[in-house]
Structures are given as C-alpha cells and as structure tokens.
Length: 250
Ligand code: SAH
Image (cartoon, rainbow, N blue to C red; front, side, top):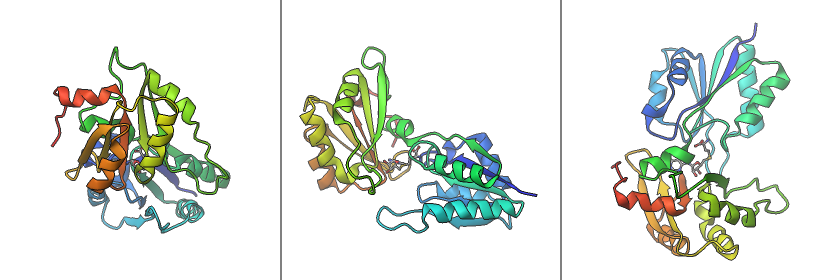
C-alpha cells in the first residue's frame, strides 16, 4: 500500500490565508514537510503524533537538497502515510512544486495539488495595491530576480519585461538583493524612471514593512532601510492607489 502526497500551498504569511482544504489536510497528516516561509502557526494544527520535518532552505544555505526532499516525500508515502508537503504561497508559483509532483509521478506515488494564495497577489493587496485596476492595467507579470545559478547566462528578457510594463504591473519575486541590477536593466529598456515602485518585506504578517519610491530611487531606499528576503517589489501605476486610500493593513 502506498500513501499519498499532497502539495499544499500555505499562503503568503498570515495563517488565516490557507485554504479550507489545505487546513483539513494538515489536521489529518501523518507527516508534514514544510518550508521556511510557511506561517509556523499552521504546524500547531497537526494531530498528536504527526511528524513535522523542516526542509526549509535559507537563501545562502540549502538545508536539504531538492533531491533529498523528493526522496523523503516518496519514502514517507511508500510507508502508507498521508504526506503533506507544505509550501509558502502557492506550490506552483516559484515553489518547485512541479519538480516534486514529477518526482512522485516517476516513483508511482499518487499526489494532489492544493493551490495556495500566492504572495505575488496577496502581499501587494496587504500593502493596499491591487495588481490590476481598470483603466490603468490590462496585465500583470510575475517574474523572478533569482535564477537557477547553474544557468549559463541570464534568461530574463528585460526588453520583454519593459513591454509588459507598458501593459500593466510587474511583480518581482526573490529579487531584493539584486534590485539595483534589475532596475538598471529595466530602465535601460525604456521603462520611465518615475514609474512608481514599492518593496514589501514580510507582507501579510505583523512584521510587514514597505519602502516606496520610483523605479529610479527604490534600490537605494531599500538598501538603506535594510530590507531583506522575503520581500517582493511591485512596479507600475497601481502603486499610487495605496496613497489614494487603499493602505488598509497595519
Ligand atoms: N510559492 C511562493 C513563492 C516562493 S519564492 C508564493 O506563491 O508566494 C519566495 C519569494 O516569494 C520570496 O523571495 C519573496 O519574493 C516572495 N514572498 C513570499 N512570501 C512573502 C512575504 N510574506 N512578503 C514578501 N514577499 C514574499
């Protein structure tokens, strides 16, 4: 008999932002393998006797390799367990959930995906910024500033991002330490320097901090404020809505 692996999105930080389905699975799980960015309050929902394993990765130091995590998921499921793989935000948005699902598939382990509320939309919302707004935007684009370091050269197409910025909002994940490089490239591709921009650290939690500026001024402000991961950056006219009365949180 084999158990099952559930790839569950834990939401962006506020523990109330997990789905009903995800919470029920945490309460039933035999084992929970969790990441660094999940709301830790959720672990208190596990039943007595459930095993909770921290497989979180620090930005500089990988506690467990992806292969080791995949192997743990499979080994626990092979012991007929209900395995919850709890990941920050949504498992399929820069969460390597696809890799883990493929590993389960290759090992013949049944799995389900329970989507989560991604930080990409929820963190701007808690800062008072709708990622789309009628008449201002017709798209929003989520991109990463932290690529797989084994890639031979950057595959980020900054010209395409500048074109996307003409349609709407850009949301940058995992880019706070490379913010200066990234904004310099976006400016070089023609995004106006006065475009409103904001970085949000630990969004949706009581520690939420924001630094606001323009595409040209933001990196220096973020650096002097000492913002660090987890943080994301929103670039576009929608940032102005925050000052127009939408900054509801905190
Ligand atoms: N799967 C996750 C994203 C994982 S990548 C999701 O859907 O949200 C991790 C990045 O997400 C961080 O580097 C940061 O850019 C962003 N992030 C996650 N939680 C955040 C939070 N509470 N506040 C700000 N940014 C956050």
